[in-house]
Length: 137
Image (cartoon, rainbow, N blue to C red; front, side):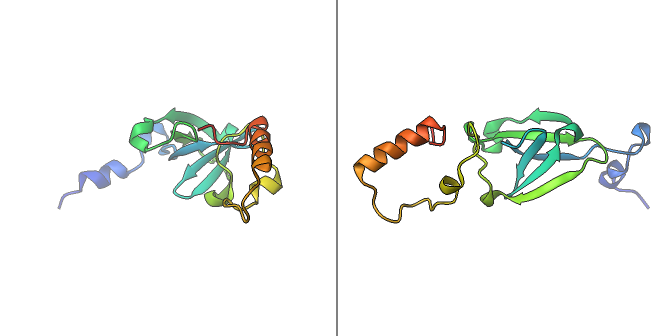
């Protein structure tokens, strides 16, 4: 009767107190001060920055990341790290901006209900650039 090597390797290592640090692989996105937010498969996980032991940046090309929006990382948590919140990623504005988007801007539909007048479109574009809300592309 033999023991499978994979099972044996999965057992805790007694040399480090039997605890392996938990890691989360995902994308580092904008978060409030003191909070680290990681986007993982459609949800954002919030941790206290003090509970983070290490953040290792991953290769963006392997992770399929866009360099403008988020940074692919592997986050190592301290033991007993608390999960502050779990958010639906679609409900959060994860793109990095200079500040928070005003409610009226963040809640409006992505496609205009009526066609915009050219003068209005110019004023709106200037406003979005001024407050760093426009996509830089």
